[in-house]
Length: 336
Length: 292
Image (cartoon, rainbow over all chains, first blue to last red):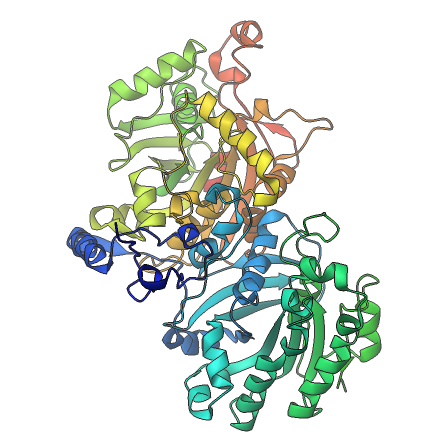
């Protein structure tokens, strides 16, 4: 009996590899589902049923065509989250939303989201109701660029701010790092006000991959900057994800020296014009419970919410506002 | 006495087993009571009178009211009521977890015939039952989730099951917290013209929320439905909100039956609790929605 998948381009029937990155592939929600033909029949039936209905707000992810209007109407900030395949880009953004669902926080709060169902879809595999044994995040489709909206209010700074987060596959950034032509296909880059370069902490923990863990991000940044696609950029965050998996290696030189090395490499590319930050984040709790879900996350979000454009806090204020003893939480370079 | 005549439309919305029917029975019982000082009076009832009489009978006999079988989903029950401070108003009861909920929240569309009705809504009474929420549970809290799911299945005779393929996300998986937000969001965006809405979150069966030290309705909402709590606090330009604990039964039928039966009037047994924990009349949350 042949294997089927709802995704037309999935190679699982040929070589067993899942397009969504699930291993084993049977864990993928599309595995074993009818092909797009059958889905098409359903769609036709649904369309017929919708004739007497009026569309209401859907809460699905935004497309590139939506965000231009949105950004100009709301003064939203576009945060481009870039990094390799399975580095934790979507998980990072989903974790910001998930953290708001866990409880009311002191520093900031949920205000609104135009893409709440899209967040729910992305959080599903980390929830008990999915029936999964270990938390996961569905793989971002490589076929189209999507965006998630979150409006937050900062009690700390007394501001309300709309954020648009990119949810774009790692392959798109990888290819953009290899070709200026492909970099230009990331049409949202000129609108980006903050760039998050995601570093896979699990890769940083492995001897065989630790030196290459930041290479793709460097290539992408170099290409995007060199092609003048980041004209509106104000700040860059280097975010090491999966800190829960890296924590046991935290005192090794490869890890302790990484922040200064990475920040220096970024500064070499973009110069001193931009604010640079370094963060370590855990979107999940470590298996031994030492690192809790959300480690470093609230500090990162607080920084996104911090007033800028003439209202920036001084370096001294930034330092005093830093939380906790973790020396990886924030390195500040280039502040004026 | 009536001072102002209004035609405000209140949508009473809630999830399955939220306590809407019990609340409707209590409201109807109070509105048709012989007490001349009752705060709310019935002007007109549109709908199946046999259904409301069945609810009323169960409520007056201190029995659980029968579950809504879904007949009111497409054709909401409407009560025309009058209150001293606000005049006449219309109360529509809609089961948002029924077909309309699926259409509005899950399917992202509504039947065109219901559009004018929903367009008229100025205020929403969102009913949530403290024991019947769809929880937000992360995998790392799996044991707690299974326990809550089993308790829920036991309570409903094992009728509720997870879907066959839980890995595939469907909107029914959304925590109650999020579903409520999606509904509010839907009513505040196109095709609806309103940009502001009045909301009262009514935590039903408040007599079951027993904690030491006692918890206020506002604190309960922040603890159990934190996203909704944040949303209504942080959108004062769009949502004028309040939260109440309400008890339409008046107490636990198993442990307080004699105490309830000893009262001179069934209507006396019902009560509400303000956000800060003060006990008020059962009808106060609805009146709160109507007062300018």
